[in-house]
Length: 144
Image (tube, rainbow, N blue to C red; front, side):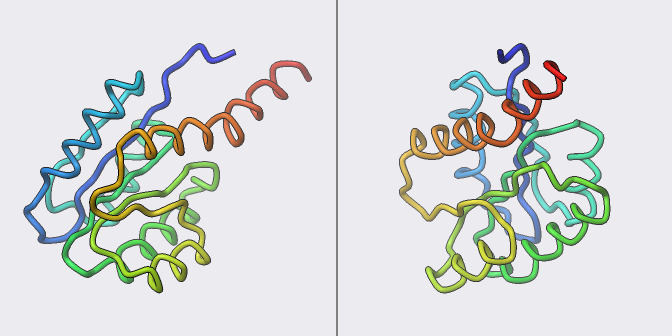
């Protein structure tokens, strides 16, 4: 029972101005039936979490090519927890080493993707996460 579309906020934090990848991902998620809000360039972690809260998103996707992923992802996670967004998926991608991906995922991010990842893989990951974490919870609440 999925009456609403999966809502995804795509954001490009920091000073990196290369957003082609973020736009490709946003279009792919939209084409897969998701509702996508593109926050644009040069977003701060505070701006990203506030937008996620206001837009009532299910997923936050960050595109980071600047090398600041070990600063930005943990800060966004911290703010998400402060704002009670514990049931929102934080995922993303960029130029991130395998070692850093493991550290970030251990901190609580969802799966992180590198350059060249097939967009179908990202769509499938988000749909599967939504089904396991949000849709099943909504169904439980509807039947209680």
